[in-house]
Image (cartoon, rainbow, N blue to C red):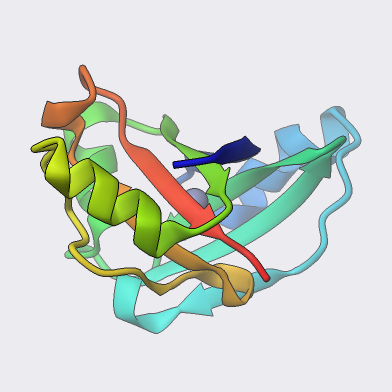
Length: 134
Ligand code: ZN
């Protein structure tokens, strides 16, 4: 598989307003609007940082994956996303290597990206997202 760069770092927040206070008001990162991904019960906001981005994640429901993450681990760093050239190839390669995946097939992420998560059990505890953008 070919990893092109760190696409973004995902950060779980209790509320977008609270998150924006630090990342945008204090650090001066540019808020480029929020988007809700209904299937994932999450609202995301991206803040470009050079070649990469910071993604804030706010749960839209108490039973969403981000809400569950905060319940277990608290707010803060949640996942690292690597931009790959070809996500289908990358997933096939990881499956062949016996890596446990959360998403067996790519699904639609924010901004029209195709994404898939690897299971933290297979990565030494880090939630890793693969992301392909056209
Ligand atoms: Zn992400």
